[in-house]
Length: 225
Image 1 (tube, rainbow, N blue to C red):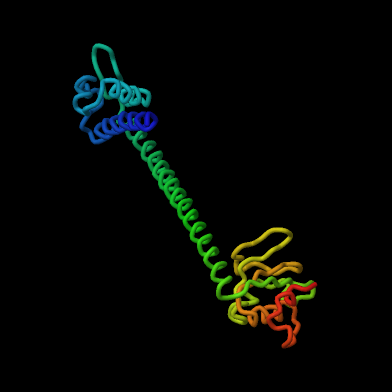
Image 2: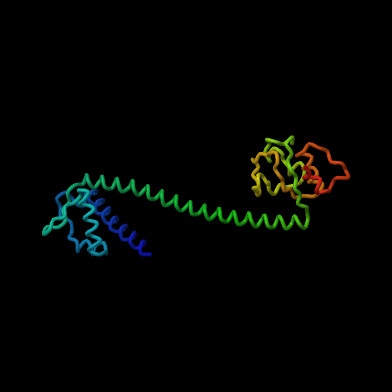
């Protein structure tokens, strides 16, 4: 909270400095002209004298005005005022881009969190429904599988068998909801949800072997060595 107040305080004196520089560029304040004193400026902008002091110090450091004790604030250079405004505008553009980018990254992080939550809910529901309506089968990919090197999209399990690949176990790791571009490798264990008949069709695709009628629906048959 204190940091936010500090930022607002800084932004206010910079805003005042920009306003005075803009008036100088417009010709409202001419070179050599004395601008109102600090107290008058503080009342004009409705800020504290300290804020005005900071604004005038900034302008003096840029060579735009001279702050002379006993005299007041005198306009020194309209060219320096133009250069200051150009620098300020460039920085403002960068700050605006940074703020927008920060906001978008925050929104993306929130969106990713929501996607993860919905994905987990979908997986939980899918596994529950699979237990009620269909069977979950494990099918191993042999070294001589005709699908080796092909992606899941190329294998097109869903359209060709009616089964869905929920996950792939590979080298001790599980890939949940594998992407369509995932390439099949020897030793992969496919977690397939569908009817026994659908699992049998997946087995045929993966191994290239025909299943005898007496083995259709036998779960152990699909992931035998």
